[in-house]
Image (cartoon, rainbow, N blue to C red; front, side, top):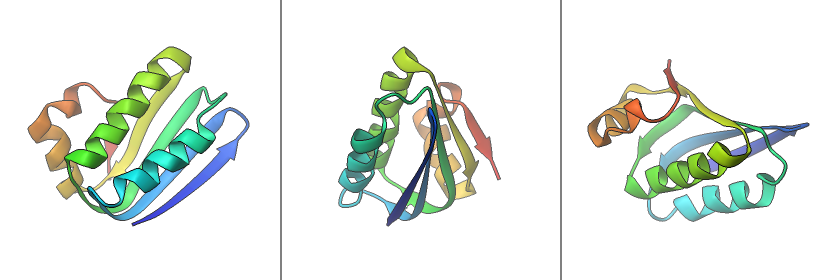
Length: 100
């Protein structure tokens, strides 16, 4: 998996590409930990994410918890396979998600 973070003032956009699973979730978690201070708008661009396991979902939910206190979070460009994970787990009703 590849993770790119772009910080523009208080907005942080994180783009993940590939597969977000048990072995790659810590990489996403580290990018968030290193960049989330002072962020009031967090955007996850998952347009190139092919797969997401529960470990990836845990990282996104943890970020949502932080952002609930300091701003907003949205997830954009969600691919159908990843949207299936959000739907199956019930997180599609909890998170701000936009599909491709």
